[in-house]
Amino acid sequence: MRTPELALLLTFLALPAAAQDWSQWRGPHFTGAADVVGLPPVWSPTENVVWKTELPGQSAATPVVLGDRIFLTAFVDATMQLQALCLDRATGKQLWARDCGTGQPSSPRSRGRENTLAACSPVASDDTVVFLFGSGDLVAFDHAGEERWRTNLVEDYGELVLNWGYAASPLLLDGTLVVPILRRSDSLVAAYDVSSGELLWENMRPSDARAESQEAYTTPIPFKNGERQEVLIFGGDALTAHDPATGEELWRWDADVNPRKAPNFRAVSSAVVGERGTIFVTTPQHGPMHGLRVSGEKVEKLWQLDGPTPDSTTPLFYRGRLYAVDGRNQRIVCLEPMTGEKLWQADLETPTFLRASPTGADGKVYVVDAEGTVVVLLAGDVHEELLRVAFDSYPTRSSIAAVAPGDGSAGGRLLVRTAEHLFCIGRASPGQDEESR
Image (cartoon, rainbow, N blue to C red; front, side, top):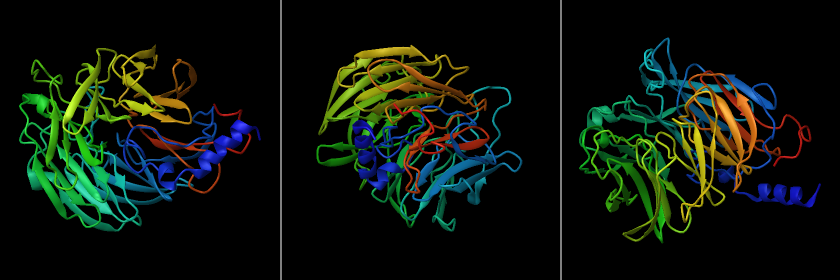
């Protein structure tokens, strides 16, 4: 084994187990990136497929992985049921399925309007997995599929009034499950004990946004502000930081989110945390992206990018670079995160728009469009396309997860969820493929 390969393998083996799981929507670092290496450089729907599992229905939720389990959701069209699913990590075999509520069919008249209410990604702790659906059903199971607790956000807080259907994923932070409810009504944030379901706190989140601009589909993101742990929530024309123990609002930045107070600025792209106190937010409707630096309650604006910028995808922070996908126009841009300098920009040339957020792993950036076309790019300061794979499966809206095998074998795994299947991609056998970049 050559020295660089040996160093890479030793680095992989030394990584903590938690970093090789993907227990929440944006992965182990909440940035869309993972530390796994050894992913196959060449693969397809039939090549380097470790296993492939047929699913009972579509979903926009990203699969989450912890220990020997994979958790994901599905909308079963025949019964209108919203299902929580558990698969075996090593084989893809379905271990259990539980009905959690009732969804809605996607619109047959409007391509791109497919929120069946199975859009929120689950979160997993060592002994509990929690599923949230756009119906308001919030249900927790142990890893064997026994229900631990449940509640319903609609029954507790009233209708979830969002034009496109509730789709925010919860955040799990040190045993506290943070659930945002940013809607066209009084908005709030609630927190639950993940093991017992006990309501820990609920705080109103006031906003002067108008009409649809009150609505948000964003997920809370943790942020270390010096020695203080905070939770970031973007939407309702503002970025706010909250105390995870009480929900108290600690600071707010709203200067350049919606200066004209447009009524249609619903937020879909979540905040992203970088290094040295940096936070990146993308204003709605392909508005400007902003680089911020926060210290205490002081928010400094570092830069602004006017385009190309996302609307419904969340940027990726990976290996000191920021990658943003303009899903409508099928473009990607790579930025230097401290200055906002555009290092490169490229047309993805996918068959259709992108809803899934990009993923970083093994020195590569993975993006997937709504038809299931995956484009693999070299991560770094030069644009290079490495691979293009077509699954031909509409609608594909889940972000790709990158994890370790889970069985002690070498190499990484990609979990690619299409409309009909979950694919586990990995090296079929040691040494079968050329060296991974």
